Length: 533
Image (cartoon, rainbow, N blue to C red; front, side, top):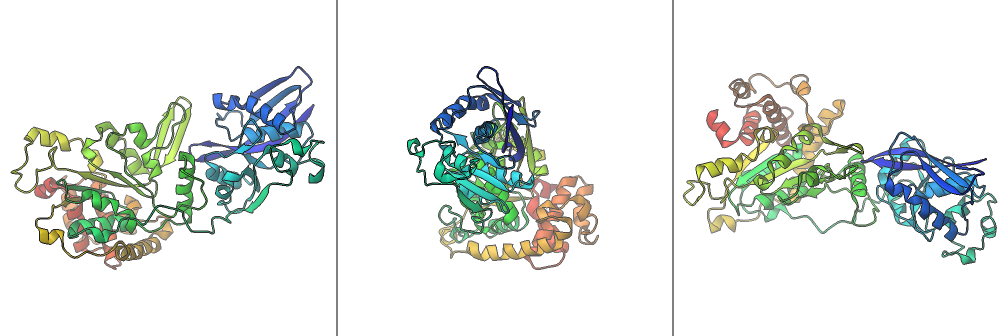
């Protein structure tokens, strides 16, 4: 009895699990047995692997081949295990050696070519955390795999090239087991490329779209512009209310331009999510720009939070991780879809349960919603032009539930420009100028919050706000009164304090005072709450 071993990685969400692949060649009738909870797509690999082996000139033995995927209790899916299964079978047949501690990640074509797979970045990162030092991928995935520091990446185009690299003879000029390389659909002189992990990561040039929209294009709207700067500085959620044409969408689309570039850890998280979700092209560098997702209001709950028939795919809340999720015409979304955002807004993650298993995706995003005051949008000012009934207005805004609005830090009324003079006013500050202030505020937050491992004021918990970062009673007197009169919930109380710290950082102050707390209350409360106060 002969045994062969190799390693690979299976992804559950964006979490990678190292898989040990064992192959055993018995003496009974020909068969290919795959064990270890493979799904239907993985079971299909048996025929792919046999054809790839034959077309590589190294047929699998005509005996019983048993392949076991460990840990056997973990459900496995996808085609990234193809190459690892083939290499373990060749190792069991004595054709290759030294595969025991190597991670193989590639799909096989029937002709033996290596095909790229999704999720290579989180898979290689998981392999590195588990102690692996070498990984073999297709050439199309080489740059992505090399983004992970501290791991050696081998890239190949064909299974025969991989076999050459691990041949028992160790001599490339003789081929593998007497196979004539001239019969193969590859250049016999081509071998696997070797890359050092993090080589591509050193290139901080991200191939992305053209320049982001500039905030200088927004004329007037000083309050709304400031309401955009504060969320960028502190990571707060924002609701923009106003008539159609007031500039709500224009403002929201310019928020990514005033957000700081992602740090190394954040960029790795965002790039890994993009790799799993299905990138539009090869991943060659870390994503440094915060993502921006703007789903249409007809999007389903599964499209927003994630879903699927088996293990669910990431939704918009995950694709906007460390960036912005913009819901234009927010009351037009389904009520259940909006309420599904409540959990990720609090926890920064979304957990999805399906019959095939449970998946947890990161979802720490900034929520920006834009809404009209009524279905016709004209219930502003005196409301003379509004054609909606009182019931229609109430039912329209009631789609934004109280618990959801309670999680919004700023609720700002965006006024429509009242004259041509305002519409044609001189441009305001550019995104670059605002970004400099935002970067300064973020730097103050990092220094202050470093002892607790936090990044922004938007992450501050109640224990810190009522402990080491507790404000003087004189500064919070009006805020405490609002809490006592039930004008604010305790969650709202915490969010006002978070926003007050951000306003202080933007002003260059070491601690919020009464002015910052009062301003935070005004920016957060709705018109109804202010009247009640």
